[in-house]
Length: 586
Image 1 (cartoon, one colour):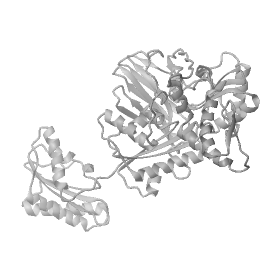
Image 2 (tube, rainbow, N blue to C red; image 1 turned 45 degrees about the horizontal axis):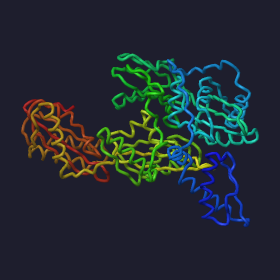
Image 3 (tube, rainbow, N blue to C red; image 1 turned 180 degrees about the vertical axis):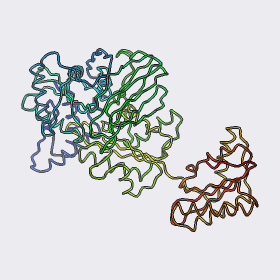
Image 4 (spheres, rainbow, N blue to C red; image 1 turned 120 degrees about the vertical axis):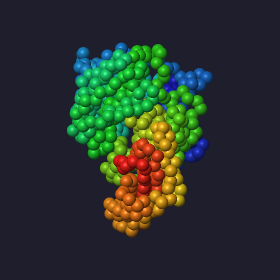
């Protein structure tokens, strides 16, 4: 009887048989490896390339999902609900007994496969439980998704990030080590590997089991997974020396986000006044950029759902039809849909940012690393500067997943990445993706999203009206009388603008503008100076603070002049104001 993976490869082979004659598929092994034959001695590369192309068009995960949801479907073995831990804890759970001979063999093979990385993996009984729960049956059932694995890790009280999960099925000793080495070799070289869990048993054809490799780079005082409504959650701990600082990012039950910053030793406190689920994430930041060290759910005033009543974890499986959009288009669609649900303006696709994003995604794929800072091109800011990109603000998300949908879901499950997607400041986004395909079609999907706020060009002719309208709208909201524009004060501001424009350097330009405006004010108004003068360099009108003139308590008159700064993309804004009382300028 054919296994699903054999049926999948045979089906792809039939397509290539017709495309690359006289080469044809001769046989397919249980693990998906195939043998082709032809009377010719050359041309096999064309057949292999055809297989890679067809694997990319219909990845195995997508194929098996459609089979499972089809009229006949595939068998699905339900996984049990594991007992829920009361606390999140970074201490390793000791094994209660020696692993079985099969599990010990699998663990030795995994350690050997990772030997070149020089890692000393620590066994954790909870990761053994996770591997056993996954119930690896590669030719019968689909392994759990990343989201399902993350959910179950949290249920066990683990704070680790999942570095790798490998299913082994029907393997003899000869092929087991080879396949494990190949699978574990895909872990990005910069990812820290700290802990291991295994589960294995004998099955027809050889050993069947799973290997879990995780990353645990912080120590934290155990904290509860379920807390009382109105309580305060304390997160106390420290991170490894490769990090210089930490950040707490939280997604509140409302969907809004909040952050706190600290050093390597952190003492975060989180108030939980609202019932619901809190997404709690701690990131470490160092030479490679921010890294997720902990990302868990905390339940406040509500019970943790059981497996029976918990909504399905995000997954692309079972969706029909699959999106036919290009991955970049799909990610943009999902991003703007998430923003629309919260009433946030959509992001505009930006070709310049997309080139920047694609370059980084390719860099990660080709050099097998996963980080915001590249050993070759540096940080996002450095890459943008090298590309000549001129924007007001920048942000970046990276994902390593299996598809555009799953990448987006994993990003939205991270409070820090979710915050970037939903940031109201960003106006544009560029998305780059790279899909590398394994020998049996499993995609390795890299995605980089570069967010930015483009500068809004300033029309110096209409800018004074726009500024006055803005400050008066704010004054009306505070029940204050509006400001009126005065031609004499306009001339005062213009005198300052003309004098400032003749100087070089921001400080000299500002000083000259204020001095000239003050002289003009005193001469024009005739009397002691009792007004307020402001001079500001800016690329955008929104960067001009309205706090000083918004705070004036009485009716006042203003003059505004806006003009370009020679040899610069900035403009100089000069504001002159006077009223019945002395006006504060700060």
